[in-house]
Image (tube, rainbow, N blue to C red; front, top):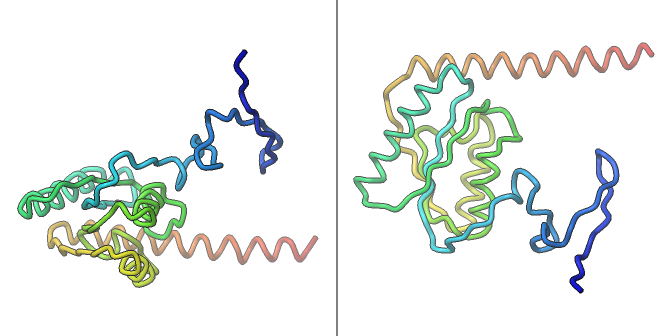
Length: 178
């Protein structure tokens, strides 16, 4: 007779059960974000990180990835590409969480980005310090192509910040009236 352990959990969406086969190190391996990535190859590697804010910029994302690949190929590095379509002010980006998780696990030697704002609109220095504290070299190649796209994206991120701020202000006013 075979036994399967079942763990009872309680979360935001209610109570649920997890079979032991879904647990890795006490964490449900099916959870998205920082816990979903098991790094099979423990060798140190280079990660090329590319990001754009909107789906309309998918072509720019592809050309950004190509420029990063060309740079890594010239250096003869083995690399992995992590790319995503998400605002630079969004703190819940899966690609960024995946990158940070890999850095934390010690499986990344270098991170290559095109511009600092590809990694984050705000808090870039915090991320740089985090990488350095884990022995990871952060390389910015500063491609000069598509300057117009970068400015448009910056304007979209600025609008997103203003919208978020306005929602908080007007939301807090509504709560006071109740």
